[in-house]
Amino acid sequence: MARAAVPGRLRARRAWRPAVLLERRTESPSARTLVLGVDAWAGHLPGQHIDVRLTAEDGYQTARSYSLAAPAAGDRLEITVQRADGGEVSPFLTDELGVGDRVEVRGPLGGWFVWRPADPGPVLLVAGGSGVVPLMAMIRARAGVSRAPFRLIYSVRTPDDRIYAAELRRRAADDGGLDVAYVYTREAPAGGSRPPGRIGADDLVVHGWPPDFEPACYVCGPTPLVEAVAGLLVGWGHHPERIRTERFGGS
Amino acid sequence: MSVFTRGFHGRRRDDDGRLPPGQYLTDDFPVLSAGPTPQVSLDHWAFAVRTESGVERAWSWAELTALPSETVTVDIHCVTRWTKLETQWRGVSLDTLLDDVETAADFALVHSYGGYTTNLPLDDLLDGQAWVAFEYDGESLAPEHGGPARLLVPHLYFWKSAKWVRGLDLLLQDEPGFWEQLGYHDYGDPWREQRYQGD
Amino acid sequence: MTQTETTGPYDGNALAGPLSEVFALEVTAALARCRGCGQSAPVATLVVYGPEPGLVGRCPGCSDVLLRVVRTPDAVWLDLGGISALRFAVPT
Image (cartoon, rainbow over all chains, first blue to last red; front, top):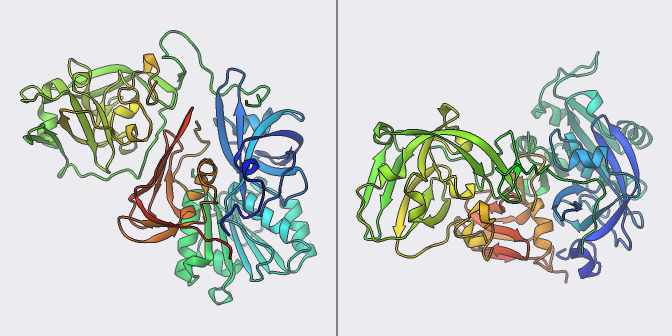
């Protein structure tokens, strides 16, 4: 579907619009969810993102892209921001933007890296670090709406770095159609069976869907992880056209 | 009409007179690129100057590094607003390379491995204003910063200091390079804040 | 206009916002055919460098530049010269 995946007034979709911070939540030591209020938000699909623009008093402007973390809920949008040390914007958003403060947003953006609840097939989600955010939007959108079986493989450095851990545990426990597996790259929990290390073919085989299930695959996170995982999936036999990727850059 | 975000400042812009307008001071050395880092073997590396009449003169790596070189300490200003003070480079002056070139050209189009180009007046490459630099901060120039060698023209915005330089064409008429084709300034003087066409 | 919190390269998903100023249709799902190698790929899969001094989208197959975007204070500059065809799906 060509038009922005969700119909809406064209002028509203393309323009920068004011947004007010309604609520903040801590998700991990370095990640915060920001709930933004945007008048007359026309909705969005899971996987889409918004651009957030900040303007300083002297007129200096800068913008960043953030994946929407949750399905559309009236005028409320949720993004989850990971603080990048030395970043110009993310530390400001995680540490300083206060409830009632305003930013500008543009979106929803991105019509390719989306999951539509009407899609029936199994879904494999592979996340690295903050790449879990758009995949969480898909998991939250699925709840109560779709029976498509979902498997999430979430790669993080240490258990403390997991975002949405409690909610993912609850959702996986409540719903037999959702499985969540963690891959730790630096430090694994005591008693775990997998030593820390980067995600590899074995992790995909153990926790993913085999190619003959023809799942829709969504891979999101740092560029090196996304490229490695996409390569492993293709090497395993998944069709490249069933794999959708979003690279966040960085290491 | 933008919405101002309370408390947001962006990068601090200290004004101590060494910063051109709109710049901020950085301690690190950001890497910006339009493409993958080219892999260039020194055995095949060459720097070629071609005049408007098609006469070409080229130097191999051995020939370039055998030429007299200078160590210079300069401030560099990126159009993306960062300035780095007192950077140290070693390279061969363009005065040396262009010394006996016969040309009526007023302009140069600089070419890099990987396809990047940038244009500037020939005069701005002469009189101690430009080098083919192969060392930064006392060490061989790293590939991410343009190694084996880059052009260094510090009096202009740093996009003119083409990384992975491979040569230049001397032209009678100015011809826009990679970023100049897409709205960046043909000259690029940081002190007159010439970032974009029309500035 | 922007620097980033991470280093690139990114992918064509990052083009959605900047190109939304220019295209009426959502562009990341469009298929772009590379003038150099002839391969077609969704714009979302281009290898993207930038966003400063500009966005450069390269063919995921052969690395040729397919598109470039620069946002100045009063203009959007767009070069699509590396794309020989763009296909937007249109609902029937």
